[in-house]
Image 1 (cartoon, rainbow, N blue to C red):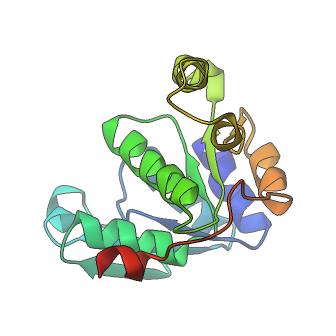
Image 2: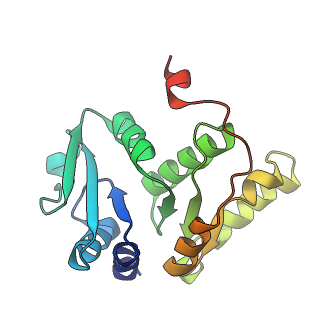
Length: 174
């Protein structure tokens, strides 16, 4: 799944922008994209360079001051966001981007690569938030959920945001 993701991103001429580490699933995605001739940009906080073992073979590697700067730069540079199966950090990153999309800070699609039903329970919980009145269906419906990376990349090409952009990152940080 991770190898297929990196390869598909490279084959479609897209740039992989990620956290800059060489370990874990995202390290495999980066290696696969590079092997397929793709462009890979890593953005890693200084404190994690040694701990996360920064990937030295990337097209570009940016070392930033902190996690907030990392996520801001990733958000600014990326055209879309994909959550592979992962833990708290993965969820925090995709939920922040989805929230920013809802607020109109950006209009970029967010997707869950739901390999083996990994995200089934999470998606049910999100759908339950609509049933209970905590979320609007138009925002939940804009999430892309698929078990194949090519389905996600195809969905990105036809994506239409649910809300018009009404706020920028600069306005929030001011």
